[in-house]
Length: 173
Picture 1 (spheres, helix red, strand yellow):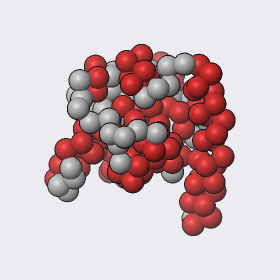
Picture 2 (cartoon, one colour):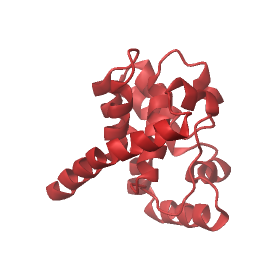
Picture 3 (cartoon, helix red, strand yellow):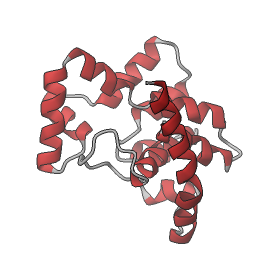
Picture 4 (tube, helix red, strand yellow):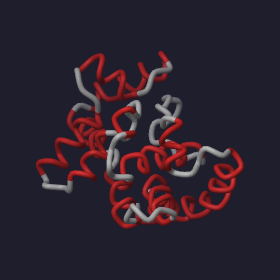
């Protein structure tokens, strides 16, 4: 929920992004993890443990052990479910090193990537103690978040909205 809220807030500041589409991308960004956890929970737990132990992003552990990342699972599902190409690309590039998104014509991929990292920075990390890949300086600049003061202000202004979204979803459980 925090990533979807952060993605929507980031998209609201851009003319080339749809805030509702960014929100949906934020909701679906970890669908590959959900599938992996539900189909192979023991493997999932051991991969999380290995990620924490080696201080390597979870997706990189999956790449080493399975030959693909959870983002790839999510992107494949998005393809099979006929999601739009920019949503599939955003899911696929959620934590990849961002060379994959710097030439992307859609702003959705870098928005989702930054939103995921910013939600984690605000305390909403789906896999605590597992490191994340940071967006490239180009993507931070593209989103207007390359200035530390602007980034600090964005986190200060957006954290309450993310907390509210997470609290609401927790009440539904």
